Image 1 (cartoon, helix red, strand yellow):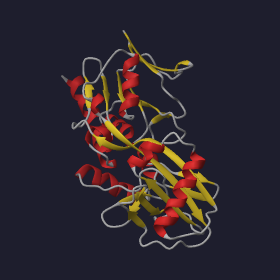
Image 2 (cartoon, one colour; image 1 turned 45 degrees about the vertical axis):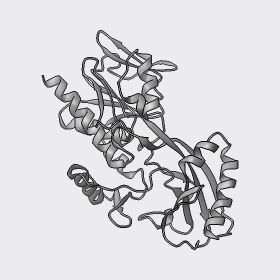
Image 3 (cartoon, helix red, strand yellow; image 1 turned 60 degrees about the horizontal axis):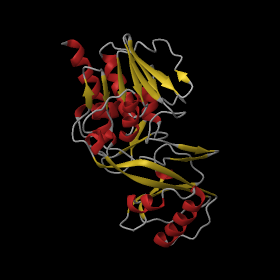
Length: 313
């Protein structure tokens, strides 16, 4: 029987890849229109912004090999020293990883039900109408820990340790200018009380040219204090702070703010994944190991391997 994977970020896609290598099918349920989770890209007409994860590194052998494959496919490229970005967009590696998998997008799972014939996936409108629903051999929760906890509660289960995870939010500001913008570097990590990161997105490989596009990330403390304010007001405040920090007074042709509630893992579980072998349900994500793209990949693989080991004994 196939496995239901909730979430098409890098952890979920990595788990699906590992299952497929072992000959086990999966169906991936994703609430958004696209893949990649926080490895995301916002497109507005001819403009493009990597408003979530800005880059990734590759230290482990398996992830290095995968990144090398992405580079061969044209789905990733170096950006700066020892770091990479998706190409031509940050979502490109997720798209490459998801190729050939059964993925249902714009499908927000609201409940899990375990019956005598297997697991059933439900939305607010009822059971998902996909072949095999009600007969899934297991469920992988590849979503932020608080969202995974909420789904576990619908089937009266818990994965000890998941409650210890803590996140810092991030408010991202996307800016576009019709002229060059003077910055000291294409990527700037700041100690400012409001802004912690500025990236010249248009400097990344494969990005559309003709405009200067920037992504500005507020720090977790400021983001937490202002998270519930309107995107319009957040964009105005962050633009003013950007101008103060950089000295650039040019008027952007585009500005928009996006709120990431679960942006930065501040406290991880400290283990590669969580898995209940008896119930056939587990959870994975960067929140298991730490705030890195590679950690999400490693966690997804680990959960798939834990499931496969449980079924081979």
